[in-house]
Length: 326
Image (cartoon, rainbow, N blue to C red; front, side):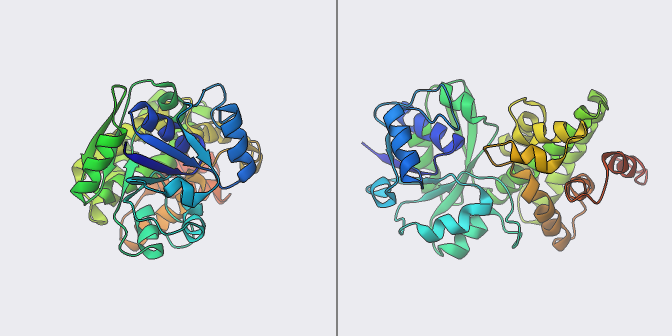
């Protein structure tokens, strides 16, 4: 039986490991902390990130990275973008093809996930798994679809074969740049969408913001070498729809709190998981500026998070932009 190693035992890593077993693939789930790994294995539940969802008995949970990776035909790296370099430095060499299952832009370098991986592990065969997915729904076996974006057709074929099943449909795509931009930008736009609703500005405002946010996403995708149609697919429009409207979105819920007047530090302190859009917003804007691309919504979010702009000022600035054709 083919084997998948899942590096990272947060909500999404756990859900993907569950899906791998559901698809008939042997799977190992690696957690950095031995105590956490032991607790998850003993309870057959990731109580911190996916409470109430039983894990399959066949799933191996371990803090031994070499044991998790042994014999793997595919490895999934499911750690936050801001922690990717440290995780890669701590792991043994991985011979298997690798899918990065994280969305964002590195804060200090403005690198996309596969660019971080290429610097840390030159020559690795890699791609990204992305799309409109809430971890708890995938773990529960609710219908979902995702994209495996990689230039290597063999990697795409392997991932689709090992992870697809009756309730989890995967599509291949060779535009890894566009898929990564979509995954990063949608988190930032979701914060803006949440803030609009939290401030009571209405559904008209959210719809306009999300639509113009998609235009920003598409412009940056093209500037970095991706394709426009990728922005209209699962990794772009699909993920944007979920994250800007779904009540389970960490980024949208953070925006909701900010729109209601809560402090960013208080919201983040009360959370167990990472709200990736917070670190991504300024990094995405910096990357876009380097490419000569204007992202007015994402720029407003970055300034709002940094405390340089109030929500009222951000809305006023966006509404006062020069009139032009769409």
